[in-house]
Length: 373
Image (cartoon, rainbow, N blue to C red; front, side, top):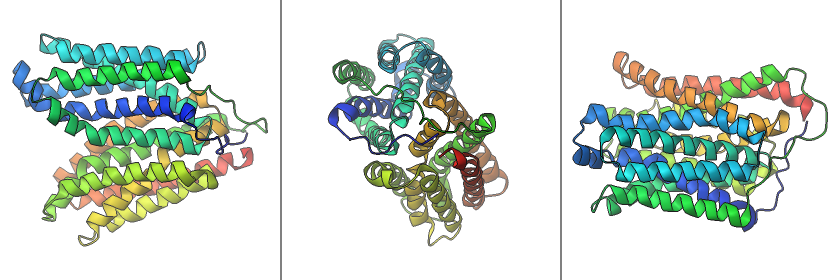
């Protein structure tokens, strides 16, 4: 099988629906944490309880991809996206207006199901048409995440409801964009030799994405704590630089990534991430190393989905999103244990070890899929 073409023309009709949808997802994803003080003030919950709203959202988003995968076998990508977006809009409206705390948590779960459905369907669709479009629409997710705390700061002063009602309006805008322009249909892989070990290939892709998400979430969760231990004045500024680097990496891949095959691009990116993680063990290099880690991570997610789509099928993308959620759960917790028991210096060493594992998995996956290219 061949990889999906990376030469799909980047027209507004192709990109706008996905960009609006991923911007909406990015805004909501980063909104809960920024709104914790507002939840505490309105519902009288403490620090131990307020986290449940984010956990419910994550549980919903992690549970939805298998359901979306099944739905993609029975209906169109556009139908899955619109239904999931409406779930998101209803859920966040409930978060905004719920009279009691348990209802807020339940509505966050519903919104999370919508997020997971939209993400699974659109990632599968854009991955099936090439490296460039899938990376560009995922880059817009990063833009939404960066702007979300500012939105909470600006609108949350008046009421907790306004930031979440804004997300509901963005969701309705997504539905309108999908209705007007549609979204890409899932393209089948190229008509060439089928892989000899599709099960093993899928397992390797799953482990690869789990390692990647573990690196992305783990770095974002713990790099600031590591820098604090080195007595840097503004670790939050480096954290922002990390997320900007990740978004920039996706933009650059969206513009020029089609010139490099997905396996080579992912391998080079994983190697860069590993090198930067180990470089962060040196205090003088740590700030720049973490920003470059974000830049190196940027191309991996979307490009790996394109690689999977060409080697097996884009309909398997939801499976990878589930394994990615496992990495996102385990890595931050594991890093926290190491930080507590070994010390701050264990953070970049553990990230470097995870980077080595990622690079090894990329190499093994490339070897098994080489004959299918």
